[in-house]
Every structure is written in C-alpha cells, then in structure tokens.
Length: 444
Ligand SMILES: [Ca+2]
Image (cartoon, rainbow, N blue to C red; front, top):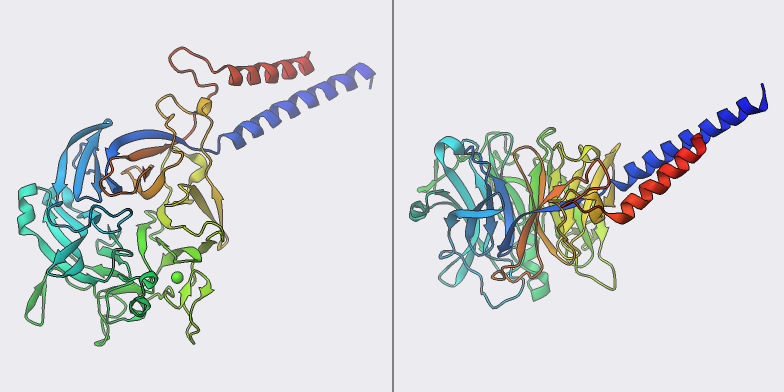
C-alpha cells in the first residue's frame, strides 16, 4: 500500500466523519419547538377544540364564559356565551372560577350537543356545574344540568370535560376547598367515595335515569368501578385528586393522563385507571402528608417545587400522535402554569423521563412560526383533529385581561437556513460556509 493511498483513505475518513458529525449536530439542534400564533387578545384561554363541522375552525373557551371561533388567525364568531351565568369576582387576580372546560358530543356533527363545566353561584353557595347546552346561543336557556357540586373556595375548582374513546363523558373535579385558607378538613373529601369532590367521574350522556324522584340527564356505565356499592357514588371512576386541571386520553393506547396540581411540595402526572386512588390528601405526589395504612396508585412522574420559588402548577397535555414532530411520537407533552415551560415525558420501560422542550432559535423556524412565548403562563394545551398540539398562554392571569394567546407547536424547518422575505440569516449562512469549506478542504 503506498503512502498516497493511505492519505486518500485518511482524507475520506475525516470528510465523512465531519459530514456525519454535521448531520448529528443538525439533528440534535432541531429537537426544539417553534410557535405559530393561532389567536390572540383572549381572556384566559382555558381550552381549545377543533371544530368537526368540516370548517376545521378552532373553538377556544375563555374563563369569562365566552367560547369563540377562530379560523386563519381571525375571530369568526362567538360560539357560545355563558358569561351571564357564571361566577368569578373580576377584581381578583388568578381567580380559578369561571368557565373551565367544554366538550363536544362524539356525534356533535349531527346532534350539536355541547357540554360545559363552570362555576355558578346560586343563593350564597357556589357550584361546579356540568351542563349540556346546544351550540345555538339562544338554546342556553334550555340548559340541562348533570351535576352541581358545591365548592368551598375560589381555588381548586377543577376541572375537565372529555369524551373518552368509549363514548362516555369523563369529568375531573377539584377537591373544592383549600387547606391554605384553613379548610384542611375539606381536602379529605377527595378520599370520600360519597363525595364527588377530588374525583374523576364517568357517565353516559346518551340516556336519562331517575334517582330519588329527580331526573338525571345521564346514566352510569355498567362497568363503572363502584356501580354495585350502595354506599358509594356510582359516577366515580377514580379518586384522590387535588385538582386534576387537565386530562387527556392517548388516542392510540386509550391511556388517560392527568396532571394533578400539588400544594406546597410536588406536582404529579398520573395514568388514571378505573377504581384507582391517587392519594390526595394523604400524599402530595410521592410525599407523605398524613400517615395512612393504605396503598395508593403512584404517579408516573413528579417534580418538586424549588424551595426559593415555591409556586408551581402542572398543566396536563397530550400524548403526541401528530405528523409535524418526528421525534415526539408517543411522548407526553405537558407544561407548568408558573414557569411557562413545556416538557416531554418519555416512557422508558415504565420509567418516565422528563426533559424540557427548548424554543428554537429564530433562524431555524419557518417564517410563519417565529412568535416568542417567553414570560407567559401556560393555562392549557389543545390537540387538533390530526393530533397536532397547541399551547394556550397568557402574560396576565386576570380573567378579564386580553393578553391570552394560542400558539400551534410547530416543528423547525427541515432545511436551513430559513429565508424570510428575501433576507438571509447571516449567522446561519456563515456556519454553513465554514462547514462546507472544512468538508471540501478535506476532500480535495
Ligand atoms: Ca397523587
């Protein structure tokens, strides 16, 4: 073998190594997210659903009771207005009452049935109210209430409405009280199977039943876990939640994920099963709050509150099954209200590992996806009909402040640099020039 041949092999080896390294660096760098604005000027957007009427418009619920319809980044109309029926004192910052969730019936396209979850004041009492209405505004007068669950404070009022893949309506209900305001006695109701507080309920809204001479606008599914226990509420699907603010169902595996907000110590994410008891208020995450000779269903993941910055609140998201992000398939995307961080949770043989989703540098983002979400609070996530994800944020959590925004989580561009309006991002181009120079230099 002559020296020239060895040099050739060496040069090619270096060239390919540099190219492979470049590809690896590029792949690692594009594990980030860009933000495309879908809607703005919203007042605490708490939930997003995509319409299934063929229009593909977005329905966005705001805490003030208005559900608005957006398409192509433009406000089309008011979908539903229940602002006159719900209760929150407008002068308070971060009040957790108001309109909190809505759901479209699985056959919404043909029957127009809509369900809402809101806090209503009747006399001197307040109730988490779960009602069926019609999407026609004038039909709200014909509200059919499924539940009115007494609340004790303006915190931990829940809650989420969600139709499962089984066609039943799932309802997450907060524990309704607050130990921070001296009502620790009420928090124990999450463990009380005669109370609907601190639970996830599951009902069939396609039938009616009569209990104690009152018509109920639902029936209890025959496989609910406590249906044969006369001393427990048969609507209960799972118990022991503090405030499972956001839950979702993995559209492929059927697993139900909930983020349950902690008090002072830990945030947790649960996979919720029929008959499960998730521990509150004996446990907060994995931390034992009160000794109890009982085993509880452990969260799949917890994260602590930092000692010097104790305010955290998990926001449950979705298991990703869209097409935009190749590297997110099957990962659970979630966030935190207070930090505004988005994270992804990966199941590694039953061990759940979380990592932060970083914001892409601007030059890696498509031109329409260069919004800056920094310094915003996450209120909720949304999933469209194709499985792509959205984040609902605000920079001011007062329920009447119009600083709410919805962003589509958008993958970085596969080609780089991205050129917008004829301008080229100089830094990125220089990186490529240097990269090519080195590669070609080794080749020739
Ligand atoms: Ca728990």
